[in-house]
Length: 147
Image (cartoon, rainbow, N blue to C red):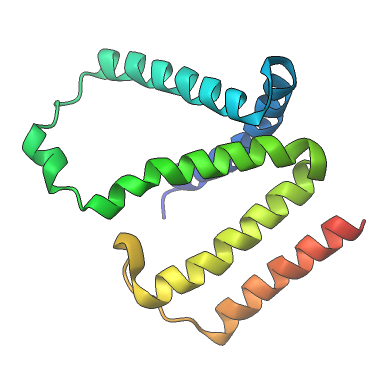
């Protein structure tokens, strides 16, 4: 595995609690988490439009959009659920508890997704050590929440 991938993944992880905090601040000023989520997506969409204009990747055909399985379009809704929930919960739980719970939820879902090869992933069977890893993460959530 390339170090660049590891560094990029770590950077992506770093921005998650920062994003939740920034969106929570925005929510206090503009009328709540849904308004902040909308503004966050609007800003992200604008930034992405600039990046696409600069990088000029090939524009997909309408047929390409039609070839995407309908269920795959739910990814955008998943982003909405995550950003709105994190925006609402960040000031109530704090960064460490929020992200510990998010990561625990991600790992539990990931075990099931890997086991059955869902949503485009290859099958990776659940093993005792993988379950132990998730159990340790859940124990970490308990410790973070308790202290």
